[in-house]
Length: 300
Image (cartoon, rainbow, N blue to C red; front, side, top):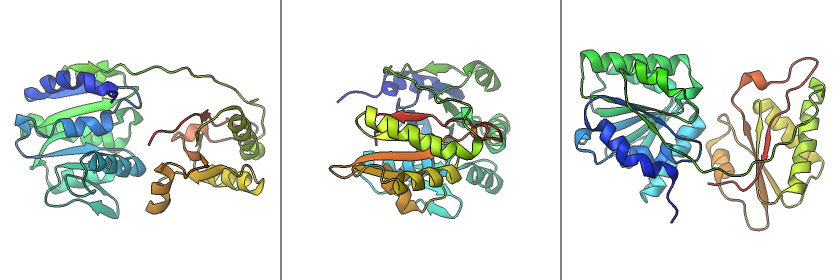
C-alpha cells in the first residue's frame, strides 16, 4: 500500500512534541495530516491516557474526519474517535480523539479553563483563520504558560506562512511535509459574464469539462444558493444519464452529506458541488467571478 506523504514526517513530529511545547506542521491537501496525525499521537508517553482535541473549522469536515478515523480503526464514530459540534455530539466514555468545531472549543475553554483531560490541542486548517480559532489559540497559549506547562499545541495547515506562527508559539519547530505533484490543466471562462448569468455560465462549463474528461468531478461554487441553482439547471437540461449530481455543504441533512462522500453506484459518474468557502468569490453586479471547476477522479 502506498504511504500517504505525512507518514514520512511522523517520526519528526513525535520528536518535536516529546518535550512540552508546540509544533507547526505544513502539509498539502491530501497528505493525510487531518486523519493520520491524531491517531499517530494516541500512544505517545506524554499523552498519558488523556484525550486529543482537534479543532476543525467546518462542520462537514469535522464529521467526515472523525468518521474516517473511526473507519481506519474499524470502529464506529463515538468509540475511540468522536466529534462535537452545535446540536450534534458523538462521543463516548472510551473516546480519545475529539474533533470539534470552533464554537465548541470556545465553550470547552469556558467550562474548563485548564482543559483537564486533554493532552494536546490541534488546530487544523489554521490558514482559514477566524476570530474563534485565534481566540482559542490565545487561550491555549495562556493555559500552557500559566496553568499547564505539559499541554501540547500543534498547528497544522496546507498553505500557512509558518514563520510567524512558529514565533507566536515561542519558536516552535516547523515540520514540512512535501506532497505529491500531479499535472493540472487550467481553463478560464470569459470574466465578462453578467452576474445574473453566472449559474448558467458555470453549468455550461461543467458540461464542457464533463465531456472532455473521464472520472468524477468536483465543482466549487461560492455558496449554497449557487449550488442549488446550478444543480437545478443541470437536472432541468437532462444533462447526462450517467451523471449523479450531488450537493455538498454543511446545511444539508447528515444523510445527504454522507451520500455526497460515498463512491457513485456502478455505471454512474459523480459531480460533487461544494462551496469554495470564500465570500469574495460571490458574483457582484456587473461581472461574475467564475467558480473553479476541477475535473478528475474523486477520492473518498
